[in-house]
Length: 157
Image (tube, rainbow, N blue to C red; front, side, top):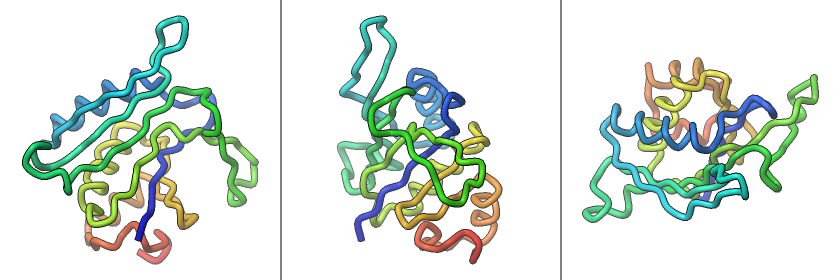
């Protein structure tokens, strides 16, 4: 099953790509994950607008299967604004971090997202299946971890 995840913030409230990159680098060290980044794109003022990051719980040279890659965007960025039916206020959300397929690495994704949302509690995780996870949802999941957590509506966990 190919599925991606999106870390979203309300528009105009997302951290800069540079701040996200630095925070992710720090939190990966804190939770014993391996981290790398490449493909950085900057605007004319020299601000980071986009980068690719890679996380793993094993050294990259030893096991590429345990790597999840993400795109990190700086707001505003083309095609990264979304709205959701569940939001009665019709707020716009910015997809600041987008994962590639994580099939088989659900536990690694959970560990990363738990650490990230602990740092950015106003963020939400949007799964392609149209459900969302907040930090309190992830705390609940952590208490009774199920490797299929990301394929289950958090209301049912």
